Length: 149
Image (cartoon, rainbow, N blue to C red; front, side, top):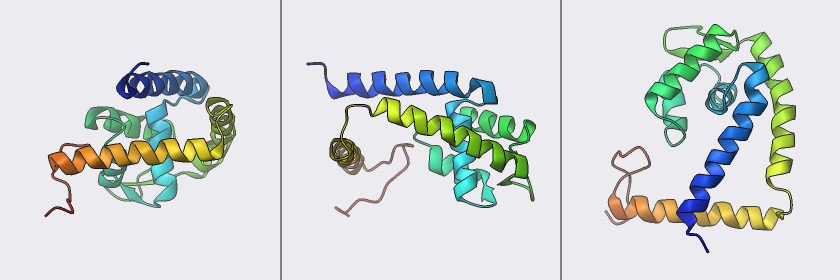
């Protein structure tokens, strides 16, 4: 049996390849789609909100490029400096993308029960928290809160 790190990396690469291919016709990548979701969920999100929410998903350069893409392609706009909001067109197009993402999620979890999925997420979260607590850092390398003081 291959170790968990192997399967984590392989799964993440497979998700990224599939999503990038699926989102290409919309002019998006997986990371740009994630940026749009942060902006959707946080009206007038700041650039800091985006970087903070997605720090485990991509580095600052990749996130900055994704923000520039969604701005240039009219998905989002800046109502104020360092703030992001979806445009009317961006909202509409994001709904179209959501249909494709739902199909992707169905495909990627085929043969996996909701309980199995929930267990996998809980185990991975616990592993991450164990390691972050032991090292005193979060996924970005910043000092993290620790229950041990």
